[in-house]
Amino acid sequence: MSDQEKNELNISTSWNAYNEQCPTRLMLNRIADKWAVLLLGLLERETKRFSTLQRETGGISQKMLTQTLRSLERDGLIQRTVYASVPPKVEYSITPLGFTLVAPLAAIRVWSETHIEEVLAAQSAYDKAQDSEQQQPNLRKIVFN
Image (cartoon, rainbow, N blue to C red; front, side):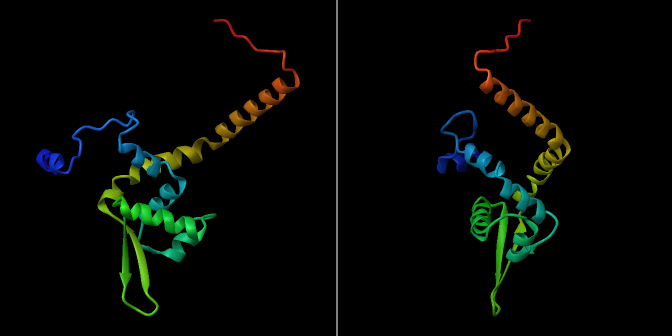
């Protein structure tokens, strides 16, 4: 899209996600959603039907799957294809735009799987320290460098 076309549509040519009014924050919300990450990961390999996506995405409700798929379709990250048959057959596939997210999202999934033990240990240590602090509220740890 040219700058002239962007101006005609009132689309900014520079975005800043740190600006609270910037629409890029909407996309950050979308790609930070666990269901979106998991669904795009499944669709990167092959086109799938709704029931297959629900079965392969453990813990997702039918309502949440429907909402997430609609949002991803609206954002242009997946495509929904309806076949005229009885009963109707619906398939979901990733779009070229959606493929641009595959590598970054895969890196986040791999990081999560690789470092979850460290995160769980940190959470446990934090929770223990909080419990200890609640039992002895007058004790504060002060660190001088």
